[in-house]
Structure formats: C-alpha cells, structure tokens
Image (tube, protein in one colour):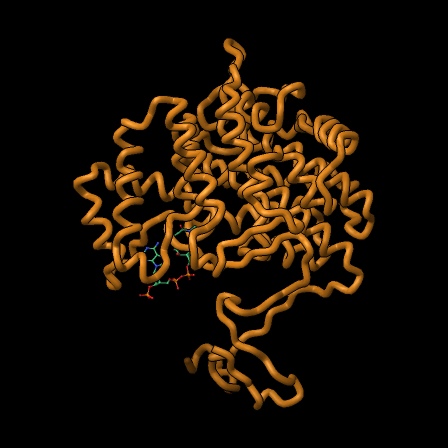
Length: 402
Ligand code: ACO
C-alpha cells in the first residue's frame, strides 16, 4: 500500500509502508540480498564461498573494514580481539543481580547495556578510533557474556576465556569447561559452529539491525545500541525462531503428530505458525539454509545422531512441508534457523542459548552497520512518520463532568 496523504499540506507527501516492506532507510555497502534469486553477499563475496573458506573473525574483518584481511591484518585483528575477551571483574555482579532462571537474552541485554558504564571512553561515536575500540570490545566480550549467562543459569562458576583457542572453540570452552574438567574441542563441531556464526553475521536491514541504526542515529553509545539490537532479535519472528523451532519439535513430540501441526499451521483461525519456515525477504530457498542443511547432516553423522527421535522428527517435518502445496505455493522453505537450531541441539547447547548465540554472531553485523552509519557525516536521526487514525481535535472535559 502506498498512500499519499495530500491533505497534510505543508508536510508534503508520505508513504504508508507498514513493516517497511518497500522502504529503504539507508545506504549501505555491507550486505547484498536478492530474495527472489536466493543470493546473499557480504561486501560482494557470496556467502557460500565465505562459509566454506573463512573463519568468523575473517568475516568480521570483512564486514567491519570492507576487505578480507591479508595474513598480517588477520594476525593483528585476532590479537586485538584477544586483548578484550575478559570482562571487568565487577561485571560478574551484574549477572548476580538476576534470578538463576533468567533467560540468557534478558541477561545479555542488561550486561551489554551496562558496558556503557564500564567503558565510557567509547561514548564519542564521531571518533573513528573510539568506534574501532568499541567494535573490538563488543566482538571480544559478547561470547564471554553469552557463555556466562548460561553458566549462571546452571549454577556453575564463570569460566575465563582461553585466548589460545579459536573464536568458536573459546566460546565452547567457556560454555562447557568447569574448574574440574577441561573442554576438549572437536574440530568438526568447531567448524560447524564457526559456520553458524558466519551465516548469521549480517543480513542487511532486518529488524534488529534497523533497531541498532535507529538507536544509534540519535548518537547513543555503541553498547546501548547493541543492547537494543539484542532486544529486537529476541522475538520469535526474528532471532527467537531457532529456540521456538526446537520448542515446537518438543511439543510435536512424535512423527505421528506432524500432520496435526501442519494442519494447524495452515488454519487461518489458528495463530500457530510452523517455526523455522518462511522468510520476509527470501521467496526462494534461503542460501544460508542450504549451507546449514549440509552442515546439519555432517554434525549428526559425526555425533551418530541420525537415529535420534528428535532429529528424525525434524527431517520428516522438513520433507512433509517441502511437499505440501500450502508451503510450496507460498514459498515457505525451511530457513537457516530451522537447521541451526538442530545443529546446536546436537552439540548439547540448550534451546534457551540459541538466540544468544545468534546475537553473538550478529554483533559483527550490528557493529559494522553502526560504524558505517556513524562514519556518514550526512546521516540524520531516524524518525519515521505515522498515519494518524485517532480522534480529531476536541475540547478538554473536567474530571467531574466525564
Ligand atoms: N507457517 C505457516 N504459514 C506461514 C508461515 C509459517 N511459518 N510463514 C508465513 N506463512 C503464511 C502466512 O500465513 C501467509 O499466508 P496467506 O498468504 O494465506 O495469508 C503467507 O505465508 C505469507 O506470510 P507473511 O506473514 O506475509 O510473511 P512475512 O514476510 O510477513 O513473515 C516470517 C515472514 C515472519 C519469517 C514468517 O514466515 C514466520 O512467522 N515464520 C516463522 C518464524 C520464523 O521462522 N522466523 C525466522 C525468520 S529467519 C531469521 O530471523 C533468521
């Protein structure tokens, strides 16, 4: 719908575009998507090539600086990240203010937001050096925050980062090691995890990235902007879909009940949707889903889980939905979160951590988009207009006459 509100006179013309289905809110040179063709490029490189050949920090360098690093740049970038992986000792107290059963996303929003108070030296968003330090701090610390939110849930001591490990391995170490037992990295699982991070690193102007830009457009500090992005990501229509997918599979419980849930998803009087299916932009197979599907099978093979009832159920649901006319005609394919949820579940990561892991991957994209926006001297504060549908002017009525 495009409505010209001509009677607004001096205010000119407005377009009414609920959900921003056809409104570009910014220029960006970071990520290109062609939803019809199923294409996704970061800085011009197809996602398939990056997922196959790069690690997450190389991709983060690409998103942030515009180019893949050469050998020396890669070393310098990795070593700069390593300098920032620890959290300020007092930040542990922020975690301890929460109930033990707090959702990791709730904890992450608070802890990342609190970083604004720990690192006020990054408040100068117009200073490129300050922006750069903020980006490194966030990329380095968000995995520690995510892993500690899990440790807090399960009542185990916080595990410090081990900087000789790779980015994915370090996260797994902080999640799964205990003071009594080291975590032994499995290279196939670490590679699969890096792939999840690469595939989720950026996706142009989705809800959470637009949120980061909108908050940042007022000059807010980077930690507040990323905390806002995490809040936006949490919803089940966005990043929360991976957690919702596994919760849904648990609710379905058995292959014999798939038909019942497919029928519910098709029923327009029922608000139930098949979680992990459909995408706002991709009207073809999401290219990330194709990569993750392959990775999913590699991980299930590695762990010998192909006969696990939960994974059999997921594969059967995928098969039925891909053949069902309702889903085929609407081009509702399984999305990346359908498969990434299954992979993370197979790795022993609890459902409640899935969206937190999405947030740690997307931090690379958020901080790159935020830096790009702040480097643009012509950027304006984001300020959407509205189509007002409320009462016309009326006179105030005193309380005793109402
Ligand atoms: N299950 C059943 N029907 C669906 C689903 C679904 N998962 N998704 C869309 N539809 C139907 C709609 O009911 C609508 O049908 P109609 O034309 O008969 O009215 C049609 O498909 C088009 O759907 P829209 O709501 O217009 O699609 P939109 O682009 O607004 O929504 C979204 C996209 C939010 C992703 C939606 O497909 C959805 O809710 N999916 C499930 C949640 C999910 O997996 N989200 C993850 C997104 S990927 C990511 O964040 C990385």
